[in-house]
Amino acid sequence: MRQSLIDLITNSIILEYNLPNQTLSYQKSCITHNDLNDDCYKIDDLEKLSKIIYESILYYSYDQYELDGGFHQGMFENAFGQKFKFNHKAKETYKLSLGFYGEALLYSMLKIFYKNNTLISRGYFYDIQKKTEVTGYDCFHLIQKDDELELWFGETKFWQNGKAAVNDVFKNISKAISDDYLVNTNFATIRQFRGNIEDKTTKIYKLLEDWNKRLISNMVEELKKNNIKLVYPILITYDQHKDGYNDSINEIITHINTKYNTTSFPNIGIDYSIFFILLPISDVKQCKKQIIEWIDNKEPLML
Figure (cartoon, rainbow, N blue to C red):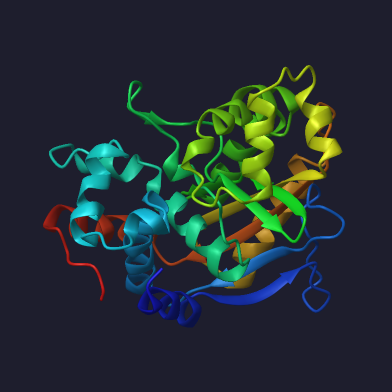
């Protein structure tokens, strides 16, 4: 990732506070892991956020090996035809509904603020025959920390209505946090695309190669045996409440803890952690419209 984008992100998106917050008497979400906090970020310049998302699309779409020596502007423009369902001639309402805005933002925030040096991410799981990416999660980051492996399979909503975005998350979250969906559906895809992992010396690549060469009767047990954990970040970017930033945070957390306090995940066998990343902004629709304008006009990327 170019230093100019790293600097733009670190100087523009600021961690305001974590939850729980004793000063404000705000709790964290009822499904957030005991050892984790919910993180509340702030950005006051909407155009800078649009720029961050626009520039992040390149790095979300290609790994560093592909980018080295490549013509980045051309690769960036190709991504919309080859990796996303972006139709320049489509109506604005269709363009506004696409999911890559939040996905690109989540990718960069995880990389910059959570130090996720990914071995492989969701943008690389493109199925040419189906003309689509693997579905179900909005980020696919395989992370190796020392000798531990983490699957960062998260979700993002970039909606005007924050409570509606939360409702949509919880509509499918029990399905997403389950052995059947994680292992039998999406981890099977990772095994299929293991060749996309650039560094063949990593533990995860060696494990994937080993599993491919023998019969695995219980993949959940294999994951547990190798101390592989699921981390599920949920990024919600939404229009700020009329009463200000703090009320925007409190409204979402209160909604989660009131409506979804009985949520549980009995169908997953490996260790898992869930946490929220909240980013209220001034105008979701305008942010997207600016990005669409730059895409349609082929705005040059930063140097």
